[in-house]
Image (cartoon, one colour):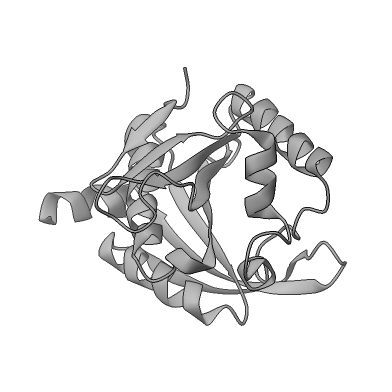
Length: 201
């Protein structure tokens, strides 16, 4: 198995996100307009709130296909007992892999009530470990949409911790689901920087 089915951190349990591990109706509730503040959550994400259960089911099927072909590992994030949201799905996080360039791109979204608990940085630690220690990738690249200052601060903190850097702005990097063209700020950590930082910890 290329990707581990489950990953544990100090406060989180990450379990493969697929039809077998989540109920599609329950997951739809979290990804749709039923979830409070979902528009704020998805403002800087590459997807809009799901409108139908079928849309959520198709999304899970796409994740399963990418898992099987080794291009994306996606995990439901559940805090452990004693932490905010214990046992609940508070979001998902994963790693998108480009084997041609040996580059991994961490991804995450969290429900608004669980912002500020540092779950994102703890998930980032797990994804860097997956990328560099298990998959032996050369680079982690983190794109942050221009204007998303909350995420920029979080990404700067963990890339700095691993000796990484800010590469600059990529103009017209991609487009939103509505067709709006956006710029990304790019942060990277190399395999060498990661290894050096681990020896200093």
